[in-house]
Length: 283
Ligand code: SAM
Image 1 (cartoon, rainbow, N blue to C red):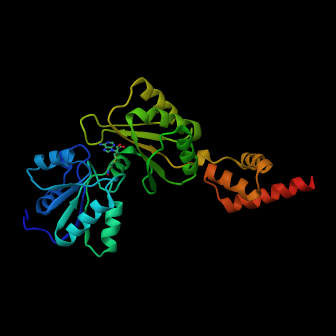
Image 2 (image 1 turned 30 degrees about the vertical axis):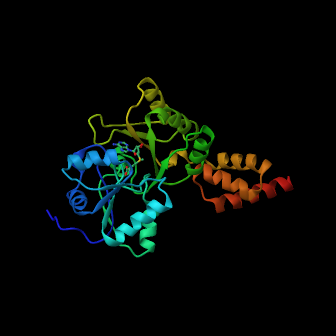
Image 3 (image 1 turned 90 degrees about the horizontal axis):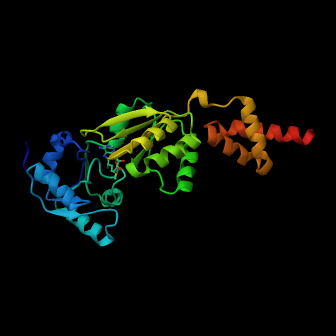
């Protein structure tokens, strides 16, 4: 394995999401050859470095890092190789690093990515839901209203939706999905790459019942299948929804609301809303 120091710059290094066996050869080599390791939590990364038999100076860098801390790291990577890791998985994916990478690139500092595990891709690859298009949307909000609004906003997206989730919030999220997207197939991927790995599919209602009876522990990815043919309402149902919306909003707003709810074409619905409105005026 190469042991010479690396060229100066920023090295984004993915680490395992639970199973040390998933650390890549390049990750070990890069961590071994960098001058310092920037990390969210020096205890967590210190443990990983120990397991890999590496001893490196660490710099704490998280979402709350001050501008001065970021500047110091940027100055360091002009002179020497700096690795950025997060507690687990790929940095920047619901983890710190975005501003650091953006700023490094803006200053012409070389940025290299050493890919590896990430829970979003691991979950997608095993859940059995469509993978041709997916949308990763981070964590759902904590509050009921905000969580519901996000689900409504994303309900028409023609892609598998992927969220990060935690055990204590899982049932509330599943109940919110059951309310807004009752027909969708949902999957809960839990403790990926670890001893108690599990991937369970069903409707949100079924899964909410299951996890109420068997509270989920550990780390979780929640996936929602895209809107399917079965969910597309027939023309009469669309007309009924448009008429109801037209009572309190303009044709454009009514079309937007119904299009969003069902993932339908907004322009076509606007034309139909105008027809319905003209029909009502004549009647
Ligand atoms: N950067 C990480 C990545 O690339 O996956 C994600 C960091 S984010 C702060 C932590 C969240 O990722 C957890 O709350 C969980 O939703 C998800 N996660 C991380 N490891 C996981 C695992 N082994 N199994 C399931 N989900 C996991």
